[in-house]
Image (cartoon, rainbow, N blue to C red; front, side, top):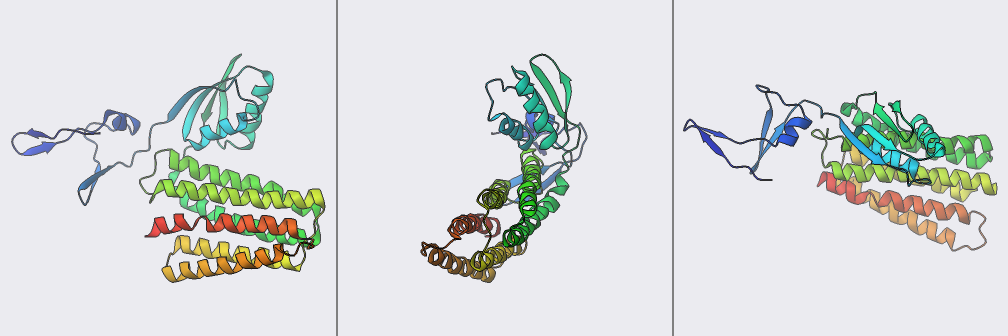
Length: 302
């Protein structure tokens, strides 16, 4: 996007702002904007929140993926969506998904082949940091609760771990919704943060899958896998600590602990008769998912 500089009155240089940006943030005549000079760039900011994003989409071809399509509307930052459908089953799935995951959304209009859904809750971008911290801490607790449930073989406790993934998903969805809403002026490298949130949600999925596996196969954790869960959580906590207060010495130690633990899991997996092989497989995947986030950590801090 390019704009020509206009000279007015022989003294003042004027540059027009994009009409779409003006409309999105409802900029009014005489309103003051913040300007920041950064190298060869001028950054223009407003405290206004972006005007709601609206969508008209036909989901009538979706069945198994309908709930994911609805989730994408939420995560993309839309505040109003007209959703077309064909069957009563699709309508029922839309209603169930709204109740379960799309926080703040309600059906405000319903016709034979479409519904209008609107967010009745404001996107509070200032809650992003607190929600991201809750996401980290919730995953740490999920690890501890899973470990305890695996030791005792408590089916109810394992089912609670499975259910807790819903809380993880809601926190991750909110964080992604804020990033995609356009209120990113306070975020450093929002694209990297989006990837990080995706990975954190995946970690929750891994914990859920381990708990479900234990329920289905009646797996009880032994001493080896218990210790591994504790060590994995220690590495995850170290990652969270580095995320909020980065230093290269801590980052190097994080890498050393990872490689040591990877070797330990490889050794345990080589013992073919070990009854905990299923758990070791998932624990290694969990560990690799955590280390995969190292690039995001560096990108945010270098």
